[in-house]
Length: 386
Ligand SMILES: Nc1ncnc2c1ncn2[C@@H]1O[C@H](COP(=O)(O)OP(=O)(O)OP(=O)(O)O)[C@@H](O)[C@H]1O
Image 1 (cartoon, helix red, strand yellow):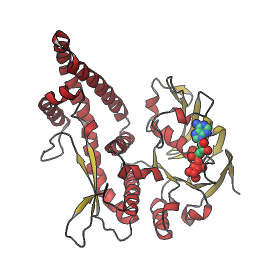
Image 2 (image 1 turned 45 degrees about the horizontal axis):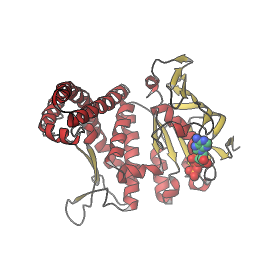
Image 3 (image 1 turned 90 degrees about the vertical axis):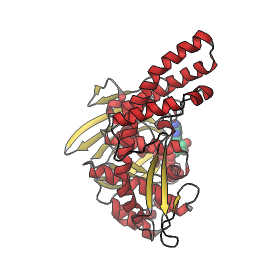
Image 4 (image 1 turned 135 degrees about the vertical axis):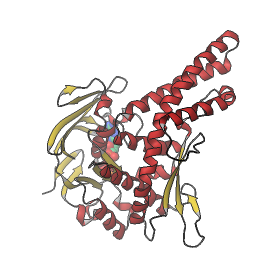
């Protein structure tokens, strides 16, 4: 797939932008703070209805205005659809496909698919467990857009259950009895929706593993295919012979919730469920010490961490391709971090994508294979470099 036309209105630093794009490689070149990332961020937003840089919509709307519009003509298998999202911080967002309003904006998720590599990706490796959970869930939703609703449901169930736990923790007498009776319903909701999310994550981790090893070998100098690995650490016992079914996971969650009841009531928060899980990233140091594997977080060097983060994105891209998709690849300011050899290696790996959008401060940082069409970005103007 590729974006053939992008229109922005009051998005980030852009009052109005209208730019025609082509398949193949496109580079956006400009000094710092000129709006290169803002531009590719808009396309990423359309794909997931969230940004790779911020957790809320407010910073995406141009300062001093109260509504942003992102519109893109997306071409997939020769057919074009115009996708549009209206961002209204503090009020409901709206989305349209070919001018027809959607009843829920999230129905647009997954129609355009992007994989973004950016320097912020280091947080995938060095950040909190929630950063890695978000990585898994974003990718799971791209693979199966209906999971966007499951994810939203889970967040809602968790919020309501936590508030009930707090009430039960502090209430006395009949108020406490009534909160405890209602809690049973929310235990079941959490287990049911949580099992669905957990099943999707486990499937994803199993599918992603082989691609991660291959990607790390390609981006880290001297690495071998078994070096990088990932392991899902759940807050419940997952000691199953094979990939557990959703029913098995639901039952396991209910059992674990029952076992932690007292702790949960003492602390007034939900201690069991996918929101407590961790994606463990490990690197094998193979050669000298046999099969020693170490967590990436806290142990890996800066270079290894960076390569690992890049490999996670590359593996995501390969997995989506293996699913039959052709996501748009965004390489946001990544080449400055790589030496010439690894730039060329990365360029070679992604050159087959239908559309690759690259941002860089200087054109010389962009490898030859990805030079393609070039735009200059300066003072909010995006002009094609003839
Ligand atoms: N909501 C907003 N309203 C107005 N301007 C904004 C908004 N959000 C960001 N900006 C401005 O956009 C600019 C950042 O643009 P962007 O992140 O695209 O830079 P860039 O060209 O990618 O730079 P770099 O090479 O440093 O990454 C900053 O000057 C910032 O002040």
